[in-house]
Amino acid sequence: MLERARTLRGADLATALGFPPPGDAAWAGIAESGAGSVELKVLLVPREGSTLRLAGRHGRVRTRRLHLLDTRDLALARHGVHVRLRDRGRDRWDLTVRVRGEDPVPGGTPPTAARVELDVLPGVVFRSTEVREPLPAGRATACRDGRVDVHDLLTDDQAALLAGAVPDLAGVALGTHGPLVIERASVPRPRCRLAHARHERCRFPGGRVLEEFSARCAPADARVTAEAVAGFLTRHGLTPEPPHRTKTAVWADVLRARPA
Image (cartoon, rainbow, N blue to C red):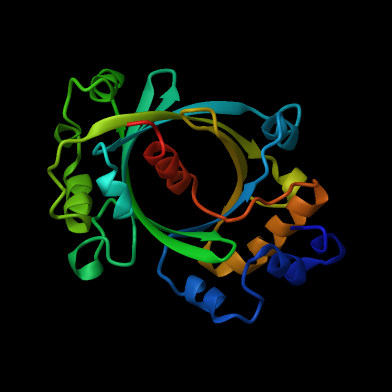
């Protein structure tokens, strides 16, 4: 996809990758969205050892394990709702309720503790509203193993976000799916010219591998950040892998395709 893009620069390079051109109204909409931040994401063709290679010899690669809490047929995921239990290592856990949509709660007003972010991928923009809270390791593992109902662990804000997004499913029993294993490395700014960039290598149940490069910025800086992301991918010979989708959406597809 980037063969022609290697001869381009700046905005033309970002457009070749699939981001909107500089004068497109989408950038103004992103800048004025009211979101707290923007994360630009590009799926990559997986390559062994790429996470450590991009982070450099002194980069630290951290491993995370995500567990998706949903019904057996992933009813929440079908509505763009994800309840995730994350093992960050060293007995550090957190629980997240995330909703993708314009009006995740009645009236479109997120709970007080919610973080609103735009996920900008080549060709698509998602609005994500999430509430993430730390969780004691004992309670987290009990939930993972089915000994504690996740609804008993949700904060008031998390429960409100879930109920606002899927009122008919807010109290339904949820099982544990996963884990999704993620090797994550922050990419140093001198290497990529981006303040908040990272590379992730995801291993799904069943063996499928996905890689993603992402950069976080303020909404007003999204267009120039897209240009910097495109330039970084080109300089390092990284190949995008369309269609560009979030790893959570790919994960849901992997789970749906598993044997009954």
